[in-house]
Amino acid sequence: MAKGTHIPLENFETFPAEEMEKRSADFYSQIRKRRSVRDFSDTAVPDSVIRNCLLAAGTAPNGANLQPWHFCVVKDANVKAEIRKAAEAEEFEFYNGKAPQDWLDALAPLGTDESKPFLETASTLIVIFAKTFGLDHDGKKVKHYYVTESVGIATGFLIAALHDAGCATLTHTPSPMKFLNQILDRPSNERPFLVLVVGQPAEDTLVPDITKKKLAEIATWH
Ligand code: IYR
Image (cartoon, rainbow, N blue to C red; front, side, top):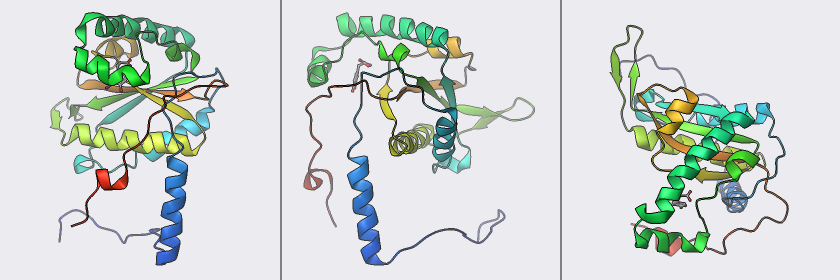
């Protein structure tokens, strides 16, 4: 057996098959209602909700349990405005020369462009940083493992938790994103991973008319 201290697995629920089936179907029917939203109202999301969802994100499985993430919750209008200004400058470059035509063609159904008003209108931005390495008490580097996978899974938990709480989200990835370290005063071992825009959808919000792949297209049984 492993060397670390071990304790009994507690509070893990199992269910009879029929109940598993119902629960999994219910979860699917809820999560399939999630849509990336690009028009937000200015309705505030309570801090308590954000806190619970961050706690949920922090339970994600991750490399060697080193939890290589940091979440910056941004509500201050001035900070949001600063992030919008910097992101739109990057996005302008992207949409006007930097992005190859095939990428722009792939994005066409989404109707996105360099204008990102949601970075100011949405109640909350959660800027997610990946810690490329850690620092121990003496400032010595601690190697991190599977950083991208770990932060990706935690972000998935966060999005699902926010959706479950009735919050709309948008995963936004201005590129490059280094400006976020400077605006949010994060150290250089942290790499901006994505900006999660969080809030309530604006009334009559439209979303792209797109579909998800069928199960047979995304999965095989062996
Ligand atoms: N970051 C840009 C472009 C963009 C890229 C992908 I891949 C998307 O799925 C959506 C947008 C933007 O936010 O507009």
